[in-house]
Each structure stands twice: as structure tokens, then as C-alpha cells.
Image (cartoon, rainbow, N blue to C red; front, side):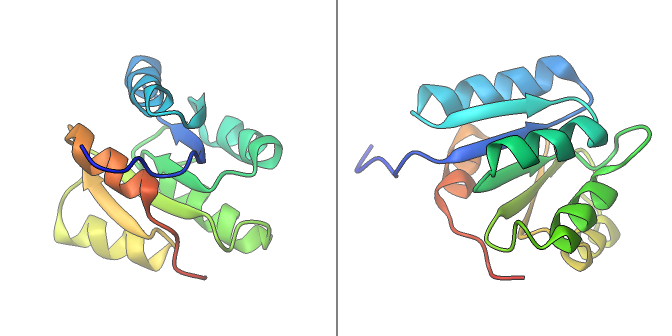
Amino acid sequence: MGQQSPSRRILVVDDNADAAELVAQLLALQGHEVVFACSGVEALAAAERLDPEVVFLDIGMPGMDGYQVASALRRSGRFPRTRIVALTAWGSAKAREWSAAKGFDAHLVKPARAELLLSEAARTASIH
């Protein structure tokens, strides 16, 4: 499978706890330090503790949605180098436009293939 990428600190956010845990386990098996959260508020608190290099973020969450979480992370000034990847069922062109406008670096549609998740985890963020 080639050379393994360096270990990263990764935050996985999804209101479906089983989905979040599954993605977190896949990434942890590759040697990454992974934390998962099931709401926007939990995600922001976890980001403060973890200082993630990558965030996989669901968009369609109740309360604080993924667009709001991404915007809050970018506005905080603490995470300019954090790669934020939408991991969502929303795959329309409009959803992709909004994710880019709100500070996401990439947009994956569920169910995303493991290879895509691992590839995104290995990339670095564009500076926002």
C-alpha cells in the first residue's frame, strides 16, 4: 500500500454516533490520534482540546450544523492550518459551493470510500 503518512490529530463530527465512531476507528487503525463528537457544540470543545490537523465534519446536524461549526473554527483564528473536510450526505452542487464558502477544504459524500478518507487525512490544509 506504499508509505504510510505521518500520524495526525483528527476530529470526526457526526450526529450519528455510530457513523462517527466507525470513521474514527478506521482512522485510528492507521495510527492517527482520533476524537469524535456528535454535535456542533461538542465539536468546538473537542477542537479546543485536541487542536486537530484534520476535521471530518457532517453538515446536516441538528442545532449547530456543520457550516456553522466550520465557520466558527475559521473565525476563531486558532485553526488556520486545520484541514476541514465535509463528510455528508449532501452532495449537490449548492452544498459543495456552500461548504467551500464556509471554509471547508474538501467535500466528501457519504458513504465515502476508506481510500478517500485516508487520502484526505494525509493532506494538508490550504491556509485560510
